[in-house]
Image (cartoon, rainbow, N blue to C red):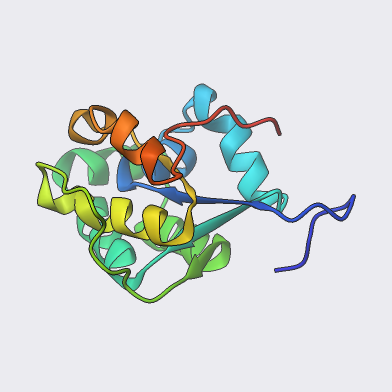
Length: 145
């Protein structure tokens, strides 16, 4: 990915699945600046194949599928955003700190491995803020589009 206009390297981030849903399924207004930052190349979204697989699985959940149908938005369109914007990385080694929810560990591991910010609303991740900061990971930093 090339640097955005102005020559500054893009910020690196990891987005958990609920944040991805906020960006491209729910059009969450509070997530708009992050979505624009990713789409404009100001933020580099780091992800793994396992994260894409989780997103595909979640898009098939009845409550999400209902939302997609209501918006006339196929799951493939959301996966297309992942494929277009996410920069695939190999699975990261286990981080120094473990999350109580094993499903969230892959996001933490990747953020720690790349010293990238982590965007999550998950309570099990949010309670790790100080531990993540010790690893150089900012949790839910403010994004300026």
